Image (tube, rainbow, N blue to C red; front, side, top):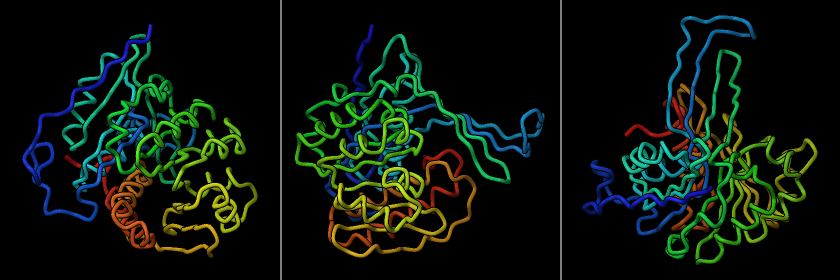
Length: 323
């Protein structure tokens, strides 16, 4: 039996503080409120020298971290000093632990649980050749519009939907979440989160579910999976037929901006010392929407802020900012 639980709001804090730490100054976007609906997961993060199956690496670095696209984006928004709520699902035994991790990052957590389902897990393995990830959505795979408190939607300026575990629930669930986000005054953002999810749901059905979305944040693989073909600029232009603003993250190549009726614009990445790439895209979205919330016209400036925050995220293991 499904048993909902809504996490209590953290105690009120003095203006200019977040989770017991002082936020230096008021940043662009002050006064705006953000709602993130998406995955909150447990992460097992492995750095190994092994290059093939069957090799034992006794010196591998293995870290356990709270992660998930929803939690990552929300905590980077909190790190930026934003007012942010997050809605997600975790296992019954993990509610308090994940609430504390989010609240310590300045995020108001609204976590529900299913007594029969555990917290979702992602295993990320990286070596000198790159990174691969495996995930079990578990509780996050059950997030629905019914989990989102109407009062939280009503006070949000931007609602962001993200996370492969959540979006893998199908086109109907995504459409319901978009419709839920549009019940308030907020602009709506979506990060497709995984090319594999797009292929499972079906590109055409995924795009149909995005009706009413204001900005889409695919990476290169996701953009091509949604639009078809192998020309990224053409894919961006095709996606603007469905969503008026498309921002494609391209790793070290920066980002591409697609706006309906305009040429595709490229913005270079902010130089960074790369420790771990997990969560960099989530940090980019946080930086972008934080700036875009106040000034929706200066999209290029918002993208540059996104690349700045992403560069910061690349310097940490686990996808979230240090607390």
